[in-house]
Image (cartoon, rainbow, N blue to C red; front, side, top):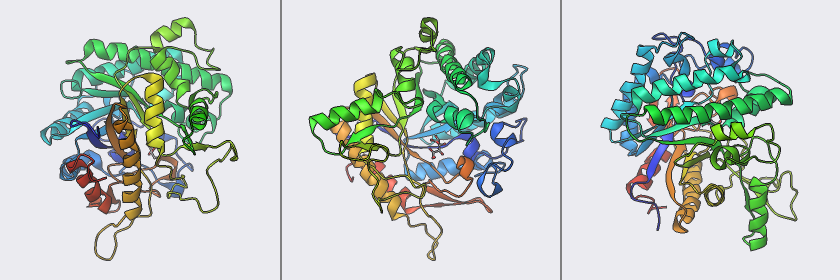
Length: 436
Ligand code: GCO
């Protein structure tokens, strides 16, 4: 069956990681602007980042050169609502209108994430996700974006990886707002984010200019069988979803997509579930690797052996994750699957010949897509793959020290260079995956 003709071959980014222009055209600080002192590697910050805010035309031209069919980006909430007045900052919105027009004119489908972790400071100061009454601000924000942009944007994601930003922001304290809260607070945040999602989805459909498609970008972390026996596959399936692993996949997917409580989610009432569980159009997930399940292996780190292949993030390279992820998530949630992130950080630099040779990334993408293709061959409806990331960017607490991009960014000058992997990906897109 291979990839469908209208498969969304794309790449992704997030507002705070690429835009820069942190205080321009009325934007006010967000939690990743204001709370990062002594928190980011090398003291980096995202005030300029890739300067995508000013260079978006050049960036879209490069996307066109690669042949992207889709581009996943996020909106900076503090650009749209710089304060709590409820008044849209038209200049901030205009940036996204311009970006979307540029994409559409280049034949690239825009896909928009509403919340990719950059909460406005004014909202954080009111208690942010900890306060249920603040959920209304998210609905207001979603409404404004959909009203202004849904004439051109069909694909929407409410949240990026709640499974990650909540534990990292409120439990381990590794990400903004860098808090270490008790379990009760973490669960309250979780519940509020889920409620905000449900309330926003309802509102978004009401105000959209055309029928829109809505999902959430989950951080799916499946377990894959090491040997494909039916017994191991079943164990992997159970371990992927049914082991109570707060903040992973089913912790969110079950209430949000199925309207069901997962083990340990009894803090959600029946009333909450009714709000949270809104019909969605696709199941999206970000996936970088999987745990391997093998009865005889060490369960806490089943794949690792000395010298196991790792990316520059020290993440294990397990390309079969996309197959098992797509298959298991489709079995469980029954919705078309979209890969909203997958990619690798590599040690990239401009070489003597002026090019960026990144064969590891080419190999990574090729392997992962081969496994994804197996899922489509077996009939799993996969509608798109968004490589993370279109360009090198601000990798949160790691600053600029990790490069995931198809496009190399020289931060002091802003100069962009297509990496070899960008040319490889261009061929994949041109042949609709036949060259894999
Ligand atoms: C995430 C985010 C991205 C990251 C990427 C690499 O999953 O953390 O969605 O913003 O940059 O995943 O870590």
